[in-house]
Image (cartoon, one colour):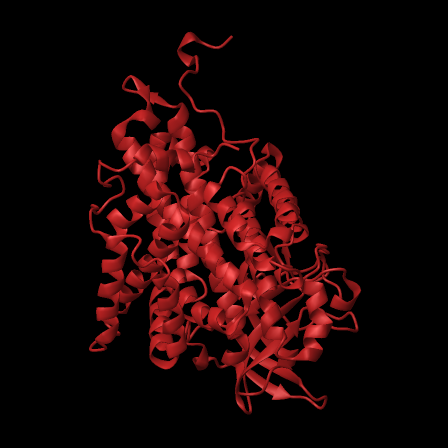
Length: 544
């Protein structure tokens, strides 16, 4: 019999057994907005099924177990043979298999695929973000491979397969394949042109032998990798298969796995090449141009991943405040807590709305939308991923001391939250990329201005922000030193334009008043008290 002092009251039930997709109004409305009507019924059914799976107790337990049992490197077998294998907990394989079967690598293969995949990515990675890396890399490899029709014909069906076929075997023998990527090296980091890995041509046309290292190689258990190396004609992109056609292991020496702050269920590695067989992708000397589409796609996934983390953090905070009582009533009904939750909800909805707009541009594929993506993707990557950590930290605080305890799940979200800002080019890289787009590709800036201009006249604070942004863009003096400030404004104006057009009036009003109108403090929970904050919070509540 439990002691009377251990009687449990005023504790919050777990947020479990719900439809993660249908409970997210910003996400469901974005899907309805961007998909063709003929695709909606099927997409709703698929996404709601994935949402119920994601919200189930069993699958949430998989996420916990995958995080608590990180991968292990096995460099040799019991007999001393070099094998370079990564061993994962069974829950990791269950998560990854479900992600593949849910179409998270098959966006390129069906109508509306990018919007449907983006929504699924936001839903699925709320369970455990670590399995998002191989899903993202496999998805993103497709446009790079399409620079070589022969390679694309061979590999694309494997990468877009909805079958998770684990184990190292020749790719031709598998029903589905995964891809990783290796670009950065010890001495260069984001400066990939400083790579020292060399590629020596072999007798067979298009084949090479690589020698060198990669300081960060993602998803080392994958079936193939896109890597950069210095060929005789300059920096070039290569495809490195993990197992060769004759069933022998390619030389792919995993030196160690990175001991990371978060993302612990996913393996990130250092690898060495020494006589490693590779096939060229694209022309010699055009490695960056070949792989850039893969980078752009993974950057969008960084935005989606941050939107996913923010949504789960906000959902947990609102759920907690709905059930927890303090000072004579529900936390949800306390004006100050309501202000905090509404502020967090605004950030989450703005991130989701922007991310799905970018996915829709990929589906469109027209010249105007491609130009828009050229500027909007790095701007969104810069801003949304930077907002993730403060949002998650504040959401954890809404749970009080409970939010600082591992069992709540909030520490795992918090450790994960800085990741997407670092991967695929940190903040300064993104800001400088936006500057390059502005200075070298005027059609990108024109496409952006046309996009935000669609909301002109709808909110005076947005109009003023657009005018101020144009003034900043007209002055190129010292622009590199103020690039972060400029890119922040670009992202905020874009988010504001989207919310004014598509979100409920209460959400758009609160966003424009705070983020664009300046009626906001330096911490969350400082929105103008005159706004309809109860409606904003209710919209964010995770109720299917």
